[in-house]
Length: 254
Image (cartoon, rainbow, N blue to C red; front, side, top):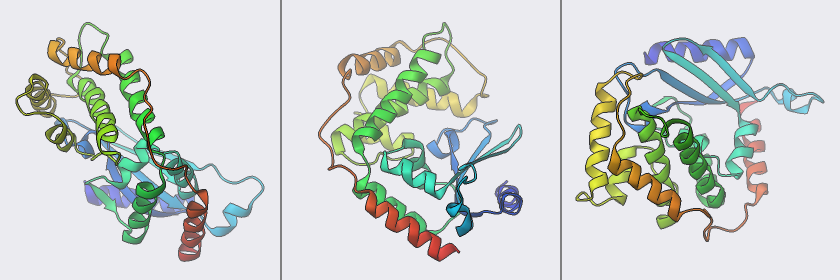
């Protein structure tokens, strides 16, 4: 599959006249709990020729597709990505930490990670994960039956919030790393999480079942105790560092 994905990335470059700098896997495969029929969520960063950034009406900063039953490709212009990185955009930061990489650029990733670690808004990152948890909870966990992956999406976002609160650093991408670090192995929620993971990786994506009472209690307790998701964080972001980095990328890639 990697060969096929890399071939599609090359075709995207030719069709859109862009250079893909970095491409990775997102979603459940990157988080460590793919189902047998999970699709491939390919995400990438690209840069256009220099003159594209000097036009009065620049090109759209997102490339979507191709999409089929197995693969889903979405790319962001590097300029867009940097603007979102300033705001502590959770999906982008996860892309940079993805354990599954289809096209790497060590210099680019190293410097983007440095920017995110030193200058990103951790309050915004927390709010992003909090919003993801709340939205998935309201949309999927209030039904009579629940898909295991929806439980895991909410739990992963909640644990990411806890990681940021406790460690004031970027949370790991893998769900197992999150809960093994943050939860006691003797806690009831720990064993319930293990059960959910086992079901998720063995069942098809559309499988749904009964509620997990202990998991529901854990989630409700988190939302009851965290209604104002603000905490002491880093100093306001200096956008000049992002400007310098973007200009250096343009010099390197054009």
